[in-house]
Every structure is written in structure tokens, then in C-alpha cells.
Length: 154
Image (cartoon, rainbow, N blue to C red; front, side, top):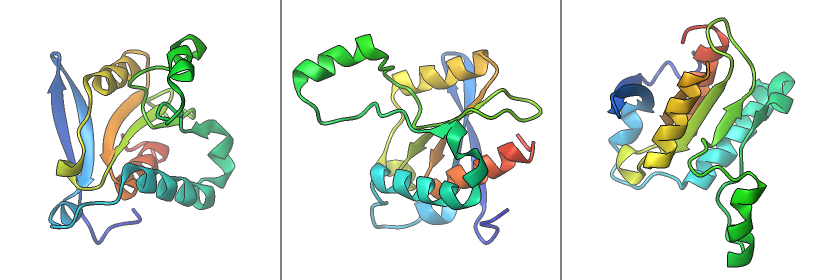
């Protein structure tokens, strides 16, 4: 895998009697500096996918659930399909075990961000419908999970 000099940690988190996986690099969590903002992590993930997974880009997307729009427009968004808690990265490509992959992307240092109840529920719904859902702390962890997914290691 691409980041073999760092060890990817996988932990299972229990929520409502079920488990989901979270991934992070321990080396990145030892930093005393705050990690990059989630928006920066998202941009890095997209930039890397444009190179590494160019042939799959049409089947990968980020649902834009966060915005600084006017309150009137925000009120309309649920009627237009906004799904509170939808994961940050959807990969509509199957592997040998799962029909699709969803990644909730967080800042690379664990203590810099948290997973909301809505996000946990979305990940569980993913599992119930044949997909693999997880939380990745940082774009590097997300890239490693994607690599494992595409190589049928998940």
C-alpha cells in the first residue's frame, strides 16, 4: 500500500448495538498541532483520486451537504434531497464483497473532529444496504481504505 512507512490503525466503534470501522494513522495523531481543516483534507482526497483513480472519477462524488447559503435556501434543501449525515465521499463502484463504498472524512487528528449521530446512522444504513461505510481521519487514511476496497481486502 502507498503509505507503508506509516501504520494504518483500524478500530471498531459501537453505535446502537452495531459496529462500524474507523481508520487513522497513529503517527498523524501524535502531532501537537491541529490537523488541516476537513475542507483541505477533502481537496487533497479529490486531487489524489484525479491521479490515482482517474478511470473511476465519474463514479465518485462528494455530496455537498454543508454550505453557507441563505436561510431560505437552506430550508428548501431537505425537499431537494439533502440528507443530513450523508457521508463525505461516495464511491459507486462495487468490489467482490460490497456494492459501494462510503467514507465519512474527518480531520487527520482524532481529537480535532467528531462523528455526529446522523453520520453514524448513515454509515449503518450503508451496511444494511450492501455497502461498506467507514470513518477516515485524513485523506491519507481514506486513500488507503479505497486501495484496500478496490483490491478486495475489506
